[in-house]
Amino acid sequence: MSGLVDKSLRARAEAVIPGGMYGHQSVGLLPDDYPQFFSGGDGAHLTDADGRRYLDLMCAYGPNLFGYGQPQINAAYVRQLEIGDALTGPTALMVELAEAMTAMVTHADWAMFCKNGTDATTMAMMTARAHTGRKALVLAKGAYHGAAPWCTPRPGGVVPSDRAHQHFCAYNDIASLEAAVAQAGDDLAAIFAAPFRHDAFIDQAPPDPAYARRARELADQHGALLVVDDVRAGLRVARDCSWSVLGVQPDLSTWGKCIANGHPISALLGNDKARKAAASIYVTGSFWYAGAAMAAGLETLRLVRETDYLERLQGLGMRLRTGLHDRAAAAGFGLRQTGPETMPLFLFDDDPDLRLGFAWSSAMLARGVYVHPWHNMFLCAAMTQADIDAALNAAEAAFADLKRDAGSLGPVEKLAFLAAR
Image (tube, rainbow, N blue to C red):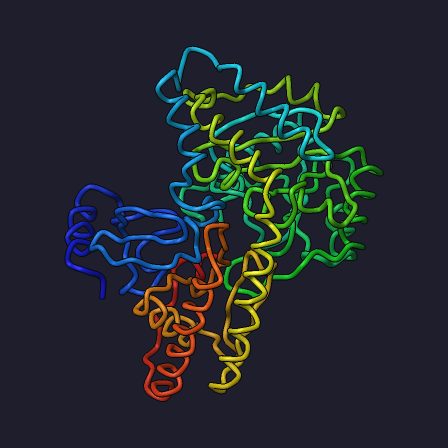
């Protein structure tokens, strides 16, 4: 179970925070022994409120790319914080960051900055509607594009008009995509695409190049914009937009999470076709011009350009994937590992209610490795081969626990989040 400090914080939170917690850390979405509260992070490790330290394979749900507290990035942030952060207007860093991002991302001719991934995807939707004068969106069923009423995966507080003008297809299914575009007809404003299928609770899948090319063709044929939502996967699949590896360039792409190594900033990038429309929408926030996160972003992008971080992440990811496969097989379990090696998801065969996944994840946590039973995970550049080997040793012991206790596992209460999907 969670520690005494964590339990105390939970009890206090119940009195002053609806439900005691909200969002992706909501109570009930993870096993009870998972901590809700944390005191710090360093490199690839996370420390909970009770002082227990974990190798963190969630990386703050993605923002940790180069390590918690990465010295050069944090120094850039602090220097700018001391000079000026949230001012009446932006600093020159906004222009410099826009220049750096458009130089890095092939399809991009301009950039706009905000704070959260939801901000960026909502701006993309507005830009597409402003560009086309139309309303309809085509999205893959189950894909996550944020937590605003138009895209949140949970129904509370959402009314039908928030979801109006949306048409859904199956990811990687060209016929389904074509049917959704046909349903939208002359009202099609945008096709939204995840860089790969990274829905919760199900196996991840890479994009079919033919599906990506067809999305590009259909957007062009209908005068609509193609949007790649790279908030989660940006800089973990490629140094460019994730679909660049397929040779497919979107009109708009959305970025966030790790572009400043966890400091709060996100971005909408676009091509010249969408420039006038982007200039016409009104979007803002009191902290969107803040300079410190932009300084952190510039330093993060420098490391992206000048280091082999991505290649090292891919190598570590393959080491983890191969080692887990061997250890699961030796213990008699089918462990499905899907998604890019830098963003793995682990699901067990014959585990429809996630009993095995929850039990194994708890056993990993008890051995100092923070994994997730149903959400994709992330590797960061602060991880080492020794960290991966430690995770594999923990996994071997956790598989042994699971094999011993498999006959006596109790049922896991159905997840509210899963029921709402």
